Structures are given as C-alpha cells and as structure tokens.
Length: 596
Image (cartoon, rainbow, N blue to C red; front, side):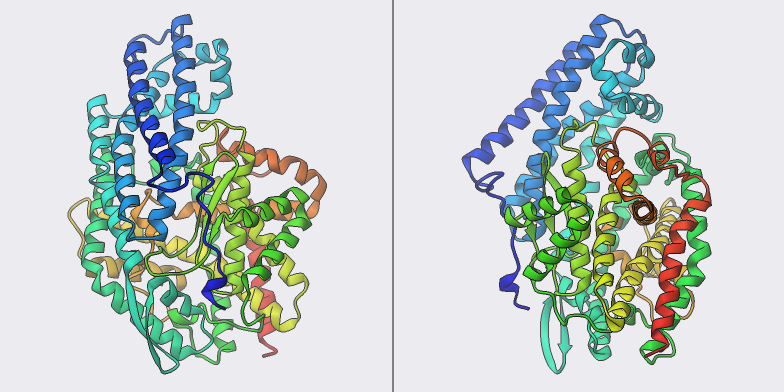
C-alpha cells in the first residue's frame, strides 16, 4: 500500500490557513470576547455569593452570561480544534504551536471566569433559579452539577493561580511529551534492510507476521523510549504532582474521586465494573495461551500479542476501507451511512503515517456537526476498525449538533458509546462474509482490542494509582516508573506474558492528560457491547432511542442515562453480561485454533 493513496484532511473549509486573515480575525474576536465576558462578570458580580437569592435581577444576569459563554465556547472549540489538527500532524509547525500557546494563555482568563461562574451558580438557590429561568431548565444538569462542584472549589485566588500555572505547568509538560513522541524515530532491521522509521510505524510492526521483525521492532522501540526516558519521567512527575496537589486543595478524598465527578459516574459503578473485569482476567489468559499454541510458542512475548493469525486480505486499500465502512454503517441506518460518505467526500480524515505526526488516533469536533479524524492507516483490518471507531465519535458529534456547549459536555465514559457501537458494526460485517481462516483473524483482532481495553487498561489504572501514591512523597525515577509498570502488567496479564513492556508509561499519551484517562475506555467498551446486544435483540425500538440518547450524553449522569435501556450499571450483572460476549469470542477462538 502506497502512502500516496492515503488522505490528508482538508482544513480549508474552516479557515484558509493558520496565517490567513480569516483565522486572525476569528482568533482576535474570540480573545476580545473573553475580555467582554470578563466585563459582564464584573458588572453582574459573578462569583461566590453570600446570599442565595435567585431574584429577577440574578435570573436576567444568569441568562445573559450563560448565552454569552455558550457562544464563546463554540468559537474557541473551533479555533482550538483547528490549531490542534496542525500541531498533532506536524510537530515542526512552529506557527501552529505558537498559536496554540497563545490560545492557551488567553484561555486562562476564561478558565478563571468559568470557575467563578460555577461558584456563582452553586451558591444560589438552585431550585428557585430552575423555576424562574427557561435557560436554566435547559441546562438543569449543569446547574445541579455546579452546586456539587462549587463545594470542591478552592478560594477564588487559589483557583485563579492554578489556572494561570496550568499552561506553563500541566499543559507544558503534556506538550513536551507530545513533541518528543511525534519526533521520535527508531532504527529497525526489517527483513535484512535497516530502516529509520517514525515511532508510529515502528509500533505498527507489532502486527507483522514475521516474529523476527516483531522482536526487532520491539527491541528498537524500547531502545528509543529509553533514550528519552529522562525528560518523559520529568513530564510525568510534573503532571501527576500538579494534579495531586490541586486535588488535595479542592478537598477530594483521593485522586480517583474528581475523575468520577468528571465522568458523571459513582464509585459503586467503577467498583462493580472493575470487579467484573478482574473476574474475567483468567478468560483473557486462556485467549493468550490459545494464541501462543496457534503460533507454536510456549508462551507469548509482548511483541507476540499483536501477531496476526488466520488470513484476511493482505492489505486494505483506502478505497476498500471507505466502501466497507459505508456499506456496514448502512446495515444500521441510511443516516449513518450518509454521514460516513460525507466524512470521506469532504475529506475530514488524515490517515497517512509520517514523521512529525503523532501516533494513535482521535476525533475532534471542529464545528457543530462537523469533525476531523486523525489516524495512522497501515492497511490492516485493525486500521479499518479504528476508522469505524473514530467515525463513531464523529457521528456522536453530529447528534449533539443542536445542543449548546454546556449541554454537550460529554464525559469520557459515555463518549465511547458510539465509537464502540460503530466498531462492532464493522466487526460483525466482516465476520458475516468471512471464511474459517478469516473468522480466526477477525476474532483475534477483536480479542486483541478487548485485551487492551479490559486487561491493559486495568494495568494502566493500577500503574497510575501507584504513581499517585509514591508521587505524594517525591519525584519518581525512570527505574521506579518501569518497575511500577511491570508490576501492573504482571498483576493483570499474568506471569505467562514475557517479556513485558516497561516503557508503556512513556508510550501512552493518556498519562499526560486528564487524571485516570484509562478506565472510561473500559466503561465505553462494555457499555457499547451491552447496547449493541440490545440493538440485535430489538433493532427498531433501539434505533428510535439511540440517536436521542447520543444527543443527551451531557444532560444526565451515566446511571440515569443507562436506565433508558433498562440497564443497572451499579451492579456487576450488566458488566458480566457484556464480558460474556467476549467470553464467547474467546471460546470460538479456542475452537478455531484447534484446527490449525
């Protein structure tokens, strides 16, 4: 597959370029609007109040400020996403990085204003406000959350200082990780030819059918990460120190609690989900043992987990991937198929791996109903599945098109629902037309994904928990990060996966972003699988509810939204039923490997 066939996204419908007059005007207008909003805040005395009265004057001020804040957030989302698209695909784009830094600097004031906004609402008579204001009723979930969040705020001066320090502290360390990762290369010998490859391409060799190539790529990758481990450790220490310090000053009991608030879920739900996952670890170890036998190995090494089994098309072309996604999305609905076609025809996707482009994949909403998808397409079905996954996020954005920014603030837990659903559509479509060898390959691909999201994600949760515990006393060394990573991997994968990957803490950008960015992926996978099972049982009634559900993910907590589908997520039964889907895939995989 030639990279020349892979699309780059078209950003010109948003702005002609980062240096265009249109972009500069929009940027300057948004910055000016932050100042205008600040003036309104002073006029209305928007900050924590001594009186909780929600009189006519307060209601009028609330509605004016809320409408202005929503408008400004929309403008800033477009600007931020537009700039980020250049930063993540070209680490050498100094204009984009400068603009990103400038936007973050100006956003500090907005963050401070939003903190005051939450305190202002949270200290008023919420029930009276909801009775008096239609705007408040439209934003009821946010209004009630503000009351809870206000109870965990520091003083206004402390919150302002934390916001001012964020660009040079938390965000600065995250940029360091992103820039180093994007520019990192490794020298790998591939079938006798020495190549210098970007890290995204090196990691994609984990799916090479030749074990010598996989091992060589793995060893080259470890060597490359080791060469940058010191600055990566500094970045991770800085980020976790900042996060933990702010968390303590906000009065949360531990480092997980603020993430539960942010993800609109409670601790019983997290504990029930993780208990069900731990009970499934032996099943995943059966999968790894069956895969080892199929590969003729006593046990898997880390670089064998992604080894291909069975036979599929040797490589997917991009046009074939587009056709496949369109057709299988059409099995669900014409609306979903048409949406996929729009994303292809309007060039929303950047798929080519290249030096300077970050690894992985993401979807970002850039304008209401319009998204951009970044991925690194390598011609495998895994990449096709990733494409379906990210377009699921884009479809979710489409369904949020008529919501205000405050209404569409979807937590990570629910943000994965549509992506998992679309990924499963692609998987089922491929399985339906597959022969025995292809079924084995597809099952292996699905189970590798499930292994990552259930087992590896839990290892990341254990690792991050350990980091927070030790970071409370001092910075951690590279060796300590490595040991914590290995311990977490042994406690989840088991003892028969060897060697392990001690530098996964440097690989995964999730550690360098929001706290405990990991477990929402497990929630998303298992919740998405559970909903997909309900779709299969009663497709017509599911379709009637699903799009409205996606449009409502910022309007209620996870437990309340799940009840729309008669799901109780606070007990283990639902999570076990979703894991039973995976257990059946493991049983099918074991049966197919016996014939090899």
